[in-house]
Length: 95
Image (tube, rainbow, N blue to C red; front, top):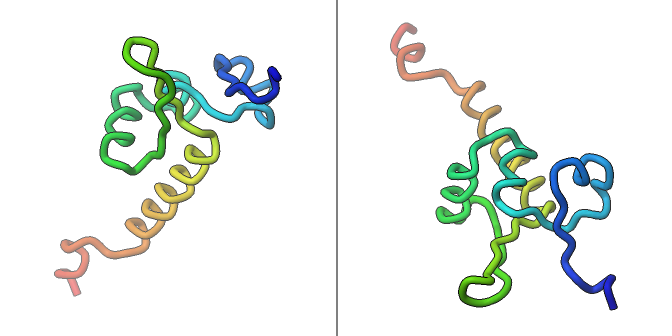
């Protein structure tokens, strides 16, 4: 039965058992991608980073699936690449 439970690990475990981790709490997700926890929570609130809520009331936990973090990083990396490739307004005016 224990295999059906969502497993939550600290960052040390994430690095050792990356294939076993299903989801991270926002603070651990923030450490994993080197941003602040408030930034992660804001991205969740904006709908840019998917998260799930488990439990009720004071025992409610927000979890960010590892697959959602990977997708977020791919999307943000693609957006960064697009910004780098497109000339800024100042550069366009120079022509």
